[in-house]
Length: 339
Ligand code: COA
Image (cartoon, rainbow, N blue to C red):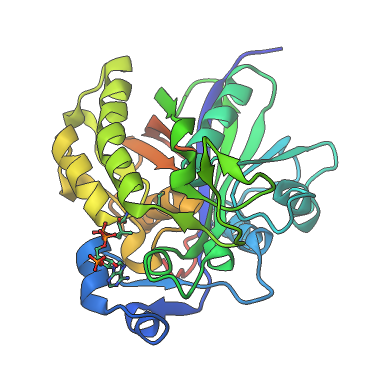
């Protein structure tokens, strides 16, 4: 097994066409645009069609990647899909994608469940697989159709979530790595603060309500994130030779601008060097980080050779972050996008 360097060579993304604005939500629940913007920073979100699922959005994101970087995906040897809203519990979205994207049948395909931290965890797994020499070309998706598990009668949650998909390609490279440092953490004791009902009735003594939609104690999640993410960011920087001044772009999970602001304050990374996708897309769970990164690339903010710090956090409660050197292959074509 030949060890290698792991390099992120390409990115693609997709959001559904249909918009749901704060004004649309005013017609569904007792809320208003001013409250939502003030408490979350979110103005609108994208909603998938009734027959459009996570695998469909992943296909569109992969097509965007293939077009922009002139990449063939046939010889991908591992598909990782970070999602908590798979089309089915099984088969996995990753297996569905092998067929829909026409990838060689020798590929491995698995979904990875870590909610809003999912993309960071999947990227970490991809790095390990490529750097160890076990795999050479890994597709990593962060994708969620949150609208399919959102209760549109609950004003405390329905204002937050939206749908979207992002994907990156991690390839073996003889010279360049994109991965500089990593940090992770889990506090399972907080699992009942944000969950989707499964087969179990209780978690650490907490009764889980019998619903097919997301349930959340927003205030507890908020407190936990503001306490833990800055510590995680500091830990990553300590593991590398980098300081906050070396971070060109900080991309925390886009849960809520009121979570991101104190995180920036506590880490010393200015909000001006922070990218988030929540204003137009809401909290798209595993997709928020690749969407914000791709938006930054398309807006001409993120440039090759820059240092990016991504940090995911959410249900579990879990968190994970990576310090990245952004050095993809050149784009050959930049198609029109909704981003
Ligand atoms: N519109 C108007 N009022 C609302 C409302 C809405 N959409 N949602 C809640 N309220 C009301 C509450 O009922 C409450 O009223 P009360 O004081 O009369 O009981 C009041 O606003 C304050 O509610 P509170 O829950 O304390 O608000 P908050 O400032 O904590 O904001 C969240 C609520 C959900 C926006 C916030 O807690 C949050 O974003 N948490 C993190 C959640 C998250 O990101 N989860 C994903 C994790 S990855």
